[in-house]
Image (cartoon, rainbow, N blue to C red; front, side):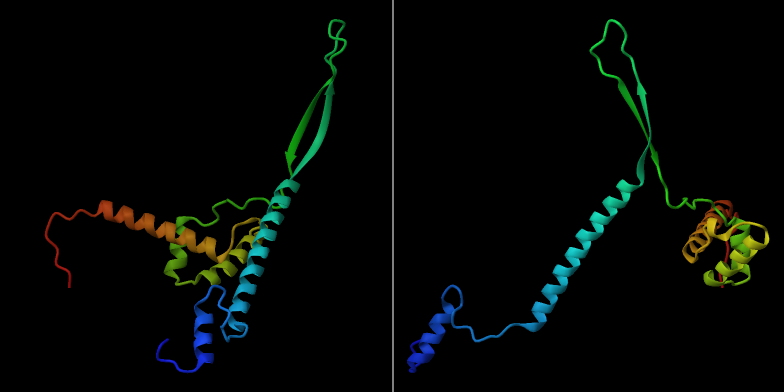
Length: 172
């Protein structure tokens, strides 16, 4: 500070050191404000998604029937009737948890070098030709990939446990 001779420069530097930064000569940081706005928008969307999920879960349950049972007799004339409420789940979609791909089918797809995407088309066409509804079966690229990987790991673990050579082997 002692080096500066101009009083205006000294006042500016002192103002910068004060709380609140009165002497800052910056405008609005457009990039930062855009990032902050996007962050707030994403948080609002996340809150909205959570509320929608809660509402969807609550709407899956519905009161199906009311059964009123009158347990009053001559001794308990002032007691009120009991109400049995039965709740039932309304499911919009059936869970597709069936295993539609056997180990043999997974190995056949591997041997034929069929991609997971092509396997979806093949299995959907085969299911419809055999009289099954493909929309009720778990035929997707991810499910086919999981089943193929599961079959491969089971095959390799069984080979690893069964293969116990008694003589030394040389790998070339």
